[in-house]
Length: 273
Image (cartoon, rainbow, N blue to C red):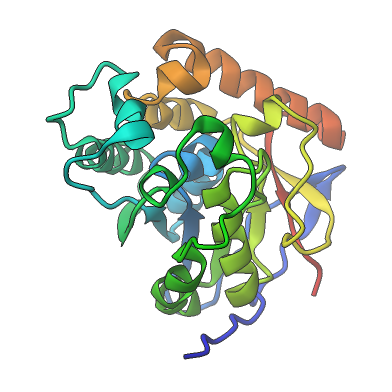
C-alpha cells in the first residue's frame, strides 16, 4: 500500500545570524507537534537533544519516535555480543533496558518517547560490526516494514527531524530513506557521535538545502543530562560517562565554527520550499 507524502512545514524559520536559524513558531491556535525519527534508542538525543529541549520549552509537543527497539528472545552470535561487551549477561533483556533509558532521557528533555516494534540490524542478519556499515542487505525487510509504521506519526507532525545517516550505519540509512519518502522537508540532523569520526557526508537520500545551526548554549546542559541516561551506551560512544559533556560541547562548538555561527549549535540540513 502506498504511503502518503508529508507536506513541507507551514513555517520556514528565519535565519537570525550567520549560519543560525531560529526555531519555527508553529501554527496558530493549537499546540504544534515535532517528531524526531530516531533509528536507535539514543540517536535523536545525542544528535538533536538540545533542539528538542528548546522546542519543548517553547510549547511544542515533542515526540521521539525510535524505529528499532524490539526485544528479541534468546539473542545469539553478534547480536548477543552487543550486550555482552557492555557487561550485560545473556539473560538480560537488553532492549527493555534501553527503552527504559530512553524514557528517562526523554523525560529530561520534556519529550514523549514512542517505540516502534522493529528489531535492530544485528537481529536482521547483520552479523558483524563491519556488516553494519557495509550497506543495506538486499534481504533486509526493514525498508518495507518501516514506512507504514512511520506514516501516521509524520502525517500529524508540524515539524519532522531525522538523521542524515552520517557514518553509514544500515539502520540509519533505512530510516533516512523512509523519512525522505514521507517527509522530505524534514530538518536533517548531523549524526552524533559519527560526525566527529568521519568526513560528515550525508547519505544520498538527504535533500539538498543549506546547513543551519540552532543556538544550543542554553539547552546543551539538559541535552548532556539526557544523553547520560543512556548508561549502556555512553562508554562505547563517548569513552565513559565523564566524557559526555566535554564531547557534546566540543561537537557543538565545532559545528558553530563550521557554520560561522559564533556560538555552539546543533546543525541541520533544512531543505528550501
